[in-house]
Image 1 (cartoon, one colour):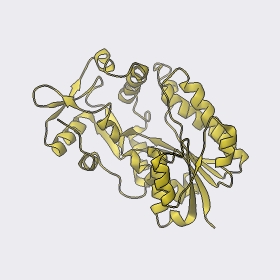
Image 2: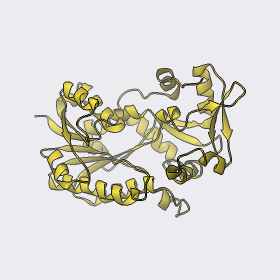
Image 3: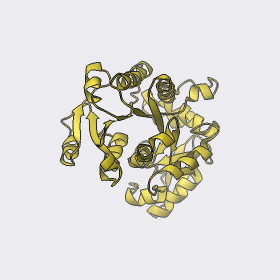
Image 4: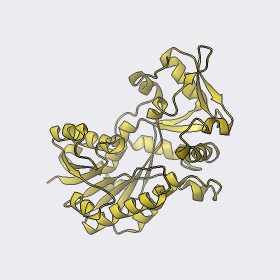
Length: 309
C-alpha cells in the first residue's frame, strides 16, 4: 500500500518540483500517493496538478484546523515556509514552522522533511544582524529535531532563477553588460535550479532511514562571480562582466524592505560561506546524493536565456 506524502507549497517552486518528481518517478510514484497543499485552490496550477491525479487541498500554516486537515493519514510531510520581508517575518515564520511540526507529530506522521537554511546570525557570532530569513529556518530545524518525529532537511542554495530577476545583468552603456554586486568576484555561490528540488528530496524519500537527521546543502556546485559572467558571456554571445560596486550603491537598487537582508546575506556568503565553514564538502556530498543529473549553470542559461537587450 502506498504511503501518503503531503507537500506544502505544491504550486510553488520547491513544493511543485517535489510533486512533479514523485509522480513521474517509476519507483517513488508506486511508494507514495501525493497530496498537495496550497493556500489558494483557485490557481490554474491547481487544476494542472489535479489533471495529473494529485489530490490538492487548501491549507494555511496560520490556521491549526486546516493544518490538521491537510495531514490526516499522512506518512511523510515536505514543509516549506515563505519569508515575507516585513516587521513580522521572524514571529510569523517561526510560528508557522512550529505549527506544522507539532501538527505532524499529533497526526502520527512518521517522517518530516523541512526546507531549512543556516543560522548565519549564530555562526557569525552575531556580527550579521539582518539574517532573520536564514536564522528563523534554522531555528525551526532545531525545534523539529527536538520533536518525536524522524526528520531530514533540504537547504537550497542560490537560485539560478535569480539571474532573471534581482541578480540579472544590466546594460553597461558600452555594448557590454554588468552583473553587479558589492562582494569580491571570487565569492562562491552555490547555484541550484530550484525546479530540481525534487531530485534532492526524492533521494530522501527513496531512502529515508539513510538520510534521517541529515541536511542536504543543495546546489549543483559552487560558482564564483568570475565563472558566472564567463558562462553568461559564452551562452549569450554577449560580453557580461562582473562589476563590484560600493555596498551602499548596490543596496540602493533594492527594494527598501529587502536591502538590509540582502546586504548581510551576501556578506555571509563572501565571509563565511553560504553553508558556513563546510560549504564546499557539504555541497559536493549533497550533489552526489541527488537522483539524476543536476543542471549546470551553462545548461540552465541555454534552457532559460538571459534577456540581454
